[in-house]
Length: 459
Image 1 (cartoon, rainbow, N blue to C red):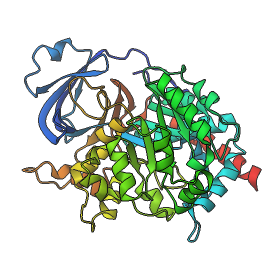
Image 2 (tube, one colour):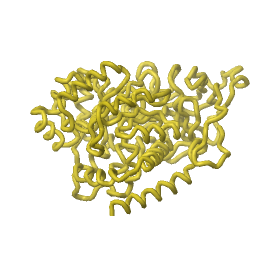
Image 3 (cartoon, rainbow, N blue to C red):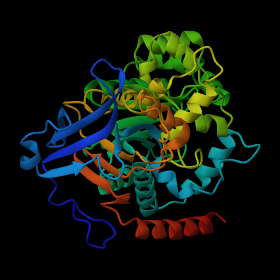
Image 4 (tube, rainbow, N blue to C red):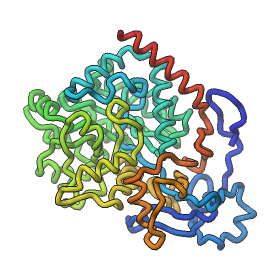
């Protein structure tokens, strides 16, 4: 890793092709049976950015001498390894809005908070959006996230920032936006070719009241032509949004999407609060992905997600977690979303187990984003997207060494604060708690100056 040059953005050079993570104290992952397991005393062999083999510690043999890099995870009190987390719903270019709405006031509704945010967003320049997205992605990475779905309308900003930060990105571009009236399906489709190993494309609709039936038919045609593209929508977030669909279409959002033929495993619905039992059954039948955003829903008084119904329908594996934006959350971490979910559903008939919450943070998010065969677990054949957590940390210790699954509950309940190192596709992007590719000191100074200028514009 080339970290010695003091530049704003650094490049990746001399990356090892083969890596041995030696003697991981604990590996928390799902296995090939979709069970959450805690593996003890294992080493991980990585080749060309993919997990090749998980080996008993001490049985590495010739690998110790033949690999390009050995990472000794047993040092300094030990290491907990998890898959990189998956954030299935976020708005990275909104990062500059931190402190502008102060997580909403005591009486503001979702619509009122978003109205303030849109007024500010409309004054942002492309450079503002680029550096805001870079601030967002790097914060998420330092909190263990490796894969992000961005719901926004500025691919020039989000993809520039994703490449700088080396984050895995599903970039869903708005075709119907409240912030950008020029957004269109044609503009979104024009971005489909600008993809690579880390970046994939998607389409987003802000809410169902923003589109006509004709536009939905056009979306269906485009998705039929591009089977790798996802569609994501804020859906069922508020009563007002559902009423908007009724006024626009004469039907609730799910009925409109069903008639348009858009209910499928390539559809991702965020918030998903105001759905009837019949609508949830229809989503389950069609393998629609759902993103639970408990902190955002609480702060904006949107309502409560019906996790129990998805659980009873045996479709909890299609429920992921998301952070939303900085106007909806104190920091952009998935762990506190898991904890908020635990608290929110604790007194229901179907409280969420720590194992299910772990899956929401990892493999469920990967499944919802169409990546369930490549990311979301530490397992042979999967991308080496790995978070390295210090075991000797107040977020983990004390734990029951006879029952290491207690580490999962500790991580979620007590909050392992920040990763020590982070690997994405075999590339270290965080090393010793510092970003390898981005000069964070300069980035933070730049973000602060841009934030001041943004406030001056809307004063």
